Length: 323
Image (cartoon, rainbow, N blue to C red; front, side):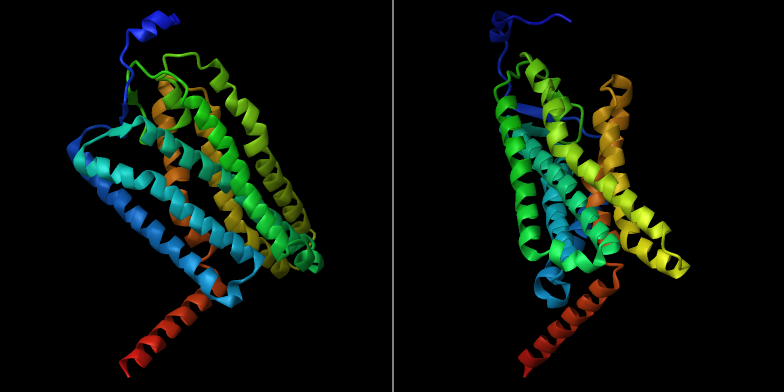
């Protein structure tokens, strides 16, 4: 591969916007995708905002598990709003352009929120481990102050890493083709458009991966190994079923999230796998935010009762206002 010299770079005009190729240019297909993703976005916002409102307003849900679920729902609202509104606008208008700094902002928000979700899923798995394996010490280990420190630490750590990453990417020269073969601004497709030296940028996943992704993943796996081992030791079949029900939904989400994430970011970035990676990006960017509240919360008996209480209070309040 021939590397351009600085004189050759100077002969190019620096680009001011990127073109997101998305899923093609077929107009009828774009309309179908618009309707599909619009429904997904509405369901995602409705379900997750409902969970946040219930966790905040109902004192019965002021427990560590629901604090984590409330944070996860807030995170999913932010996550889906980072990608879907711009995608829906492109489907409707046909304008696939995004400014350079708009692209950097989207990459920062997506990367930061994805990192936080890794931390949050690991904290939720640890919460289930303590609840099942050390129930007598649960209140001591998972107290409010520790939960607050863990949540704030997750946001600060992920944001710090992405600030450093974006500051380095923003120093790159983009003066060649400006078409990103993806439906949002992602790390690898963006780097492919740089006409400068990106060798130091390519090292970032190897530097930050063991810091930002590996510890949460190891904690999640370790927690579930301990949980499954503890469940198998329960003599009663009913007891095993009840214990497994408390963590099975979380295990499903973790498997989908990490499974698709690894397919996209670990497999080699070849032209053959590019379309496959784009398809596998949909679960953790679009589908997971929608199904998380359905899997975690809205099937939960306590959340259902909280929803009924909230609806009842709302109806009573409206009846009082009429008089």
